[in-house]
Length: 106
Image (cartoon, rainbow, N blue to C red; front, side, top):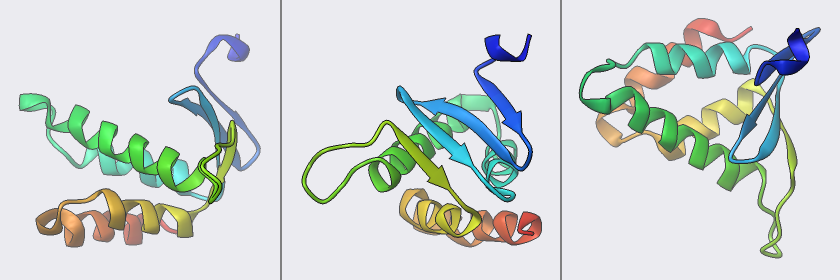
């Protein structure tokens, strides 16, 4: 059943839990997230490092407020994905990652 899976989809919103927080991916932002991960090799734990960096940036940027508190739910849009990728990507991979986002934006 869909309620048992960690990611469920409802219309154009994909809901995923990252670091114990509910992230609601809207537009093509979940597809962009998945394609960024697929664009990096699985050897030498590269993909895992990329995923950890993305997840950390999403939580830091989307779930924290200016008062030091945090939110348990956040909405991620395509525009937010560009900000997250800019923050999470090493300089030498930024252009590559941005090209992936450009390919899948709606």
